Every structure is written in structure tokens, then in C-alpha cells.
Length: 145
Image 1 (cartoon, rainbow, N blue to C red):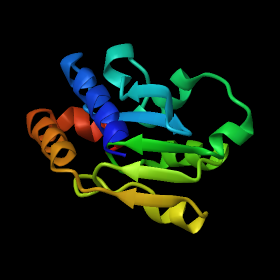
Image 2 (cartoon, one colour):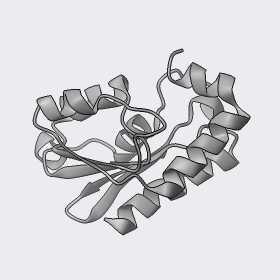
Image 3 (cartoon, one colour):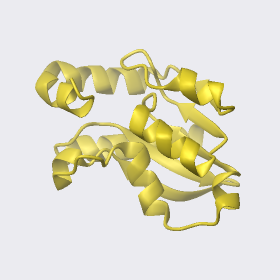
């Protein structure tokens, strides 16, 4: 698990270096990373490219059975949009770097049978909180406030 959360953190750092919001994700199937992604709303002028959505998009097309055997690692608790994609594709487990900075739709995911594991990683917390302190307007835009 450490390896995969590190990969998600690497995506978050890359997004920050590109001038974006530091949230990263990886989609893992049977110990192999299928897709890596980061929040690229700023970089691409996108309304929807959150980290989880980008990782799913970058994983390419797969049969439903692949998603049902996969795990999504994400540095931040999944928002409603990313949670909807998790439910749509039947991803059974999500490993969350942190949910102190932002609490997404974990209760919804759990109510629908998704296993949600929260690590409370200080690296994830510190990176996002520093970003929010430096760019509060951009953060509020990203979460729809």
C-alpha cells in the first residue's frame, strides 16, 4: 500500500509543480498501476479533471470485471463526482491519504459497500493545507464553493 500511495503523492506533487491543485490518484489492479492521475482542472482548463477522474481516464478502457477487482488510491477524500465514478465502475476499495482537510463522500461510498481506508498521511495533509493557505480562491473553486 505504501508504494501506491507514494505514486498518488507523486502525482499530487507533479500537479502542484504544474500550477495545479495537489491531489493525486492511482488505479491499481492486482498490484499493477493501471492509471495515474492528478487534478488537472487548472492546467487544462477542465471542469471535471479531478485526480480520481484523471486516473480512471488514463487507465484506458477495461471490462467491468477489472474495475471490480481494483483499488483507487487517492491523496484526498473523494468528492461527489469522483465517488460517483467509483460507484459507477464498481471499484470495491478506496485508500484515502487524508480526510481532515476535506471530507468527501465517504459515507455514501461505505453505504454502497465500498471499503474506505483512511491513512491520515501527514504528507497529504501538509501539502494540501499549504496549497489552500497560498491559493484559497482556487481551492474553493475546485470544491464548488
